[in-house]
Structures are given as C-alpha cells and as structure tokens.
Image (cartoon, rainbow, N blue to C red):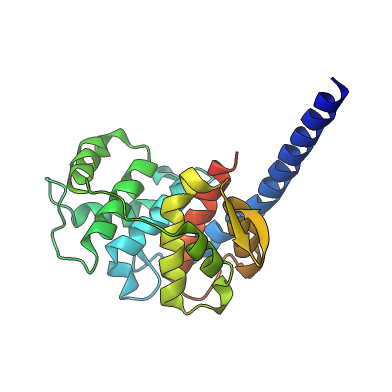
Length: 230
C-alpha cells in the first residue's frame, strides 16, 4: 500500500509539473497571436505583403490560429478576423471547391475548412461539410521519430523546411503529443519537444521567424499542442 501511495504521488507530481510547463507557455502563444495581428494591414484588409494579402491559405492559417487559441478570437473582435474570412469565402464555390486553382489545393481547402470551423459561426457549417467531402483521402504515413529529430533543429532549418516539419508535426500532434521520441539519446514527449522548441524560437515579439507563413503554422501547432497536452 505504501509503495502504491508513493507511485501515485510521483504520477501526480509529474502531471502537475507538465501542467505548469504548459501553463507557463501560454504567454508565448499570446505573443504569437498578437504578433500576427500586428501584421494585419487595416487599409489593405490583409496580412503581410501585398502578395500575401491575397493568399487564401495563409489567411486561413491565421484565422484558424487566432480563433483556435486560448484567447478565443471571433469575428466580433475585429477586421483581422472578418476580412480574412471574407477572403476565404470569396474564393470558395458553393460546392466547396476553390474558384481559383491553388498551388496546393488540398492544403488550401483543409485550412479554409479549419478556419471557418474555428469561428464557431454555424452558418458556415454546410460549406465546411462540402469541403470535408472533397478532402476524404487516406492520411500520409509519417516517420514521427525522424520528423521530431528534424523539428528539434528547427531554428537551423530554412523556411521551406520549417514550414514542412511544422505541417507534419501539426497533423500528428493531436494523437501523438504524449508519444515518446528520442532526441540526442534522451526520451521526451513530442508535445514537450514542441513547447520547448517553439519557446526557444519565439523572439519575444510573437514571431518565431520573419516568415509570416512559418509563424502562422507555428502558432497553430502551439495551440494544438497545449490542447493535446491537457
């Protein structure tokens, strides 16, 4: 009985420590959200450069991140949500397809659906369902261990590789946040690796890099990780 009590105490202690670490990370996600909002151009009604302001996938990433955060941003919070949502809707047909071909149609549709769903606006539900019907395909196989090792070197990667590994880990994090991976010979939870790596990369202004797309992906991954680590 005494051994069992000690074991239970250790489990509770570890769980508490993990919760404190995750809780301490929330100011980082708050800064990440504010950093993205600060990149919104009120006059142009979009994020980033003139070219980025027309990027539906990027707009959807940012909306999904802001509305999916602990801050629960919604359309009523301002044009930094309503205008990108308008952009998303303007580029979708009634059947859930894209009006204009995209570089990565699947990713653009997936982010569009996620963004619209994250607003919790029920009027988008029929369109989201139609988009999801177009996205039914088997998930790609992922070597989680290899991707985790790559993610551990996040700050040394070029932007394209940063975006790629963020997307891969982002797809896996919901079901694998508490999976163990080996980094430098040590076992660590994937979710903890994500929090530690993004905490180190975030430069106290909310951006993990100067690349807006990478920062938007990182913000979404941070939010998803915090949710999965509860």
